[in-house]
Amino acid sequence: MTKFKKTLSLIVILYLFVIIMQTQFMVTLNPVSATSDITADSWNTKTSMSQARGGLGVVAVDDKIYAIGGKTVDGVIVGTNEQYDPKTDTWTTLKAMPTSRAYFAIVAYNGKIYCIGGTNSEGSCAITEVYDTATDSWSTKASLPVKGKNLQDTVVTGKIFVINSDSLFMYDPATEEWAKKTSVPQSLVDSNFLALAAIDDSLIVTGKLKVMIYNPNTDVWREGAKPSTELSSGVSGATTGVCAPKKIYTIGTVTTKEEWWRYGQKEQGPEGQTSPGYVTSISPVVVVYDPVKGVWSKAKTGLNRVDFGVAVLDDILYVIGGYRITYGETTLTVDITEFVNDGTYWGTYKSVPKQFVAQESVVGMACSLNEQYVPASYRASPYVEVVSPELGEIIEKTGGVPLSFVADRTIVRAWYSLDNKNRVAIEGNATLSKFAAGEHTVTVYVEDLLGNVGTSKTVTFTTTTTASNTKTILFSNTFIIITIILIISIITAGLFLYFKNKHLTQNK
Picture 1 (cartoon, helix red, strand yellow):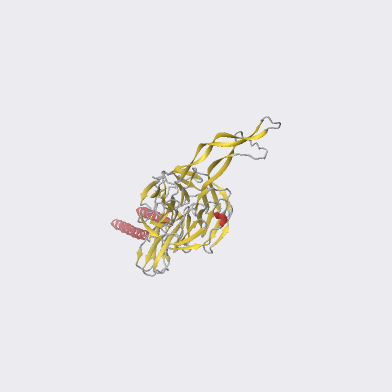
Picture 2 (cartoon, rainbow, N blue to C red):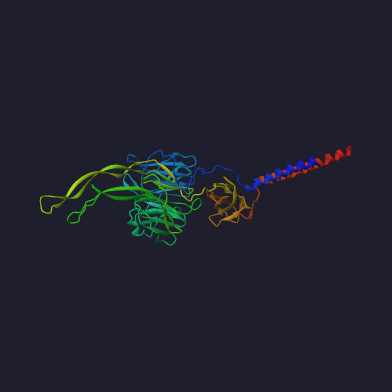
């Protein structure tokens, strides 16, 4: 019986091991982006683009970043299309945009990149070209109703919104139709530049000293909190609330004019006039808007440049390309008012030209820089991937659709969202049910031991019959098979030892 007990104990230990492994219900994968070396509130230099460009378009699709178009060092407008992989920190050149241009609107929706308007060799244009990231191909869609450059755009509720000066247009990718919406308030247009981003269902537009918030559902603008800094240029990007709180980051510059005096003093003439010389200074700035609290704050700044592109991936901001701001010497001629004793009783004040050298900001050549900014409140999220159903899969059966997924760490909670509806909590792999035949989408959300939440890519699949039978699969088929094998093993071992002991007893 001692041998039987040892054998039984070994089998029980193996069985418990299988249960422990199964309750994790996830296998370990390499995460999309390495998080071990990420430091919150930090700027990191990454591999530069192959081609230096300013006025380019930058956007994130799935786990890649695309840098398209712009002007080169020689001032040539190009359609270059480069893809950046943050996981490997490498660039790949893809099929170029058919119409070379710069200063256009760029936005990603449903795996496609929309490049709208901008300026080409003939001036401002209204062309809309769409890049399919899955097939590395371009197509032409309905043009923007008006020509424009320095455009801003974003996606809200499946629609693309484009701002051109004081005009706001909405594009429906499903119908390929444009519609004009309520114009941008003039007070915002007068701020000289606009930076657009979206949080939830609202468009947030940052100007020089003003913020306006647009509600697409009501087509109404309202005023937000004023920026704490007077911006002269900038590009906005929004964090999603998964790895960092939902906020708008406007990365740009501040321009100041300083008076330079030959003698460091301001002497006045008889009429009180002064004749200062001015020198322009351009400095980098990052301002952060909290839409919940309605307050502004500042963050660390990166390299000084303008006309760059910004993309947000996993709540990390990537600042790519643009024109570097350098500092050079400039010679200023300043009229200094001096008192001159010309032999008269009182003497007179006379304007005397003086020259001196000052440091001034200079917009340099296009660059290929790629900087990464990690927000101060960043927390790394787990990576989760839907294994079943597969993207584009056509399922021809009833009884529900199996949902299985994997993550890169231990998960304590999980949910799924079917067809963008409310999240449903699950304990592991599950069966999707109670939905009609046709095209559907599913997204999986997971939470790790630290409370970090990860979101899978949304998977689109099609069913040809109506699914039913709601149930959660707590244990996989593999687990069931192993359990059956272990049970048979226990029974077999028990019978073997029983008959062996019986045989020994009879022989005594």
